[in-house]
Length: 416
Image 1 (cartoon, rainbow, N blue to C red):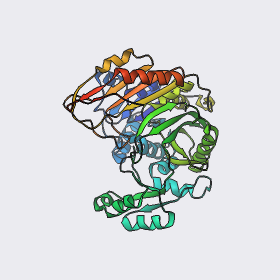
Image 2 (image 1 turned 135 degrees about the vertical axis):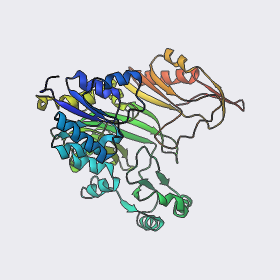
Image 3 (image 1 turned 90 degrees about the vertical axis):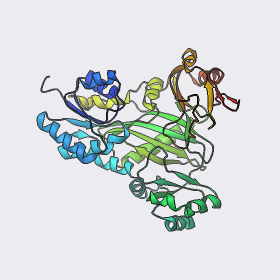
Image 4 (image 1 turned 120 degrees about the vertical axis):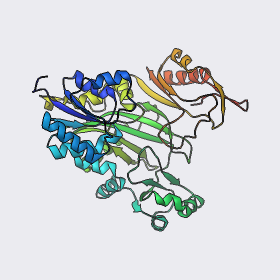
């Protein structure tokens, strides 16, 4: 290989990122788990210069591996687009003096109490909060802020371990739950109520932020915090606050010192119309949101930031709030938690106009696990559509096509 070819270190993630980097002309090395890689994925790994199959979230081990790679063939940049390599990627870039995610914004977004502390100095972004390590701390916060409130792990993700507290009985249950506090400390916050959440995907190059796409995320009814549907762009009338949400997110990125890379920021709109930052990560959004953004508005987030790392990359730009010409969507299948007798053939969904892909794990003889967090769920179906009217027709067709029959004789069809 040409020794002058930029050498990119990718931490964690999937083979598609490696393929994109290789296609752009990078010399690529990889650190991360390959347990879920297919034989085709491993063919992509074979095209990488160095591969260390260690968990990317093990920061010290990843840094040691990166130093070994750097000594053999100097690295030019370190990136991660997935959850588990973010901290390691930023630490490696800083330690080796190469390009990559900025430590400031990674630290601010990985640790929720740190983020709230920074935002406390920006009144338009602030929210009532406290770090609580025990029931006494939560009781003190409640005495100052009242109900409703929310308690979440300081460094958690995917809504795992999050408790929404809206009634005195719910508060008492958390205060009395000794097992809950073993996993602390937690962040207690004022709760911004509502069953919709906005997801804002941004591209930052040279300190200049651009919103690549905004999605509407529908939440399951209280008290379940799981997302049931995501659409890019938001349908009417939920598209009305897009401009104010965008301004709030850009101010947030300035506040945390973000200067390069992608971010995925969740926002709720308070009853008074004020957009409130819920949390953010310096990565792409889950549920393949980045693909929905590309389908709807044409921005390839990953390729854009990678191009900025190539020679001449200082001229790379990204459109801000590009017009959308299509709709990208994902819907969840959340059947009752009862033993399954049989299901419709999921392959029939491929004939439904607008269905792009699906992952369905509902099996005869099993009981689908209740969905209480944004992690694994029984089924996901991705849609590629010309507009929101077509989306509604496709969802109705899915509901007619797919069903689950339970051992008790009930037949369930999805409703959206």
